[in-house]
Image (cartoon, rainbow, N blue to C red):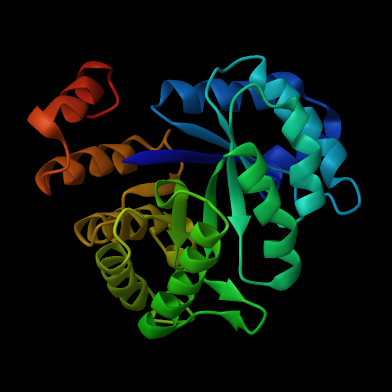
Length: 264
C-alpha cells in the first residue's frame, strides 16, 4: 500500500504561514515527521500562492530534500510549475496530477514520459469531474488509453476516481468505492489512489469517517492513498485492513509497523 504524505500543502493555514515566513525548520519538521511515520512519498504543494507558486514550491522542495531521502510528489495543476521543479529533484518524483483537460494533459504528459515518472490521473475532463460510478470508470478508461498510448507503463499510473464530501453528496463515497473496484478489475496493472479527507468535509468526527472510508476502499482494491501518516489511528487502520484482505505477505508490513511503534 503506497502512502503519499499530505501535510505539506499550502491550503493548510500553518503550512501557508510557514511558507510566507520562510520558516524552514517548520517545513522540515513536517517532512521528518511524515518520513518517520512510514510514508513512501512526500507531497509538496504551494498552490495557494497565486503568481508565486513556482518560487514557493522551489523553496519547499529544497527544504524538504535537505532532511529526507524520500521521493517527492509534486502537486500542482500547472505544467509549467511541474517542469520548473524537475531539475531540482534528487529522485524521480510522482506527478500529482494530470487530467483529461487539454491544457493539462498536453502540458504534463510530455513531462511524465520524458522523466519516466509515476503519475496521479484524476477522473476529470474539460466537462467537469465525474460524479457517478459509470462516469468515473469511463474517464479512467480514457486516461489509461491516453497515458499508455504515449508510452507510460500502466504500473506507473494511479487513477484517482475523486470522492466528494458526503455532506453535500451522500452518494459520492459509494460511487467512488464501486469505481475503484471496477477500475482495478477492468484495467489490469493500473493502481488507484484517493485523497481521503474530502469525504468527511463539513461533518463532525472527521477522522472516524476517514478511517471508515479507507477501510471500505482497501476492500475494493485501493492500493495507494494520500493521507496524513502521522495520524496513528488512520495509519494503523491502513496496515490492519491491508493485512486482513490478504495484501500483506506473512503479515510482515503489519508486524514491522507494530515494532516501529506505528500501530497501537
